[in-house]
Image (cartoon, rainbow, N blue to C red; front, top):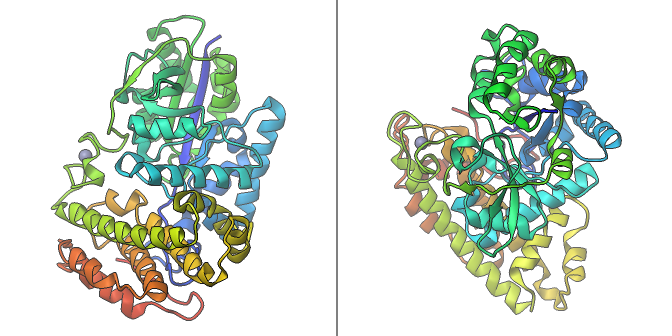
Length: 475
Ligand SMILES: [Zn+2]
């Protein structure tokens, strides 16, 4: 029997004030345009996350929810949050497999990160998944589906068995797979391949399809016949979860009917990926096209130096990335020095630090558990680890995804950089801010004519708010 799976990727860029709460991504405050709601996360929760949860779509679909959004939801939309995990639990009990994928902690474009940063993002994502879903993940969603072999190698080394890519990112696929991808170390990892044409129909034109029943009978059924292999194989769609209810109001019902009734009525068995992989291990191999993603057709240009994916002058992207990279290297150098003074492995320590950010252990106890002997180094290590966390957070995909530096996502990255630099200065006396400002001056907003250095100054003047009372505003 042929099978059908729909994967929904739910995500919101973190905003808010990194000075308001030690790790908080949960204080967004007021955002214009989201009325009558306080901000966009609240609006999208009401339009999409909650209705999908209430319809049981988190039990039927394959899904992932980005870390910043889950952290926000846990505190700000606890009802929706618990609905999602109840649905997941029902799926697990019914099928003895999870329908959720883990996500790298800060939704970083992994092929653009150094290997040790890839590992940190993946480990933090895996540990967060275990904490929230109560089991180890077998699959991981790659932010923006951005891929290179080193990223897949890291996933494999950390126990991840599969991910999802798009048709144009692989050679040799004829349906949803899964397929093997050979890794540089000689091992292999499973990759599912989404049907791009059908996914895009759902993502962009769902309201013109005449409902889930008609679409299933007229499009999905004939697509199955075209792809051959009659009587077997997987058709996989993967789209943004916000498609259902937010981008397209009311279409959470499309998703519900498609997965609960219509796919089955044309002879497709609705499945999810962990379960499908268990019953249908890969038989053949595909090769991937490195440095590709689902949201940019110019390599990864959209997230590096700018490309035609965003309108206007995008030179600010390259300049901002250089500023963030230089700051990161400076933070890392100082951190490594202190970790080595403490006779601790800096990268293992940083990877394990996720237990502190998840609130599982308090920082001093964590350092003791990791073998810190010299108590006089505890405060310095604690603050440098926090700085390492904030500097990781600068690289969330949204920092570079949009058209202008003036947007809240890019300014949020600068704010996290400043927070990291001030933490470092506090314990080492090294002031990284002047060099950060110098680099940021090269990034210019065409919308406001202000530079990254101007935004840094604005943030510095509005920071240190009393208990989460301020945001960095929005444009
Ligand atoms: Zn592009």
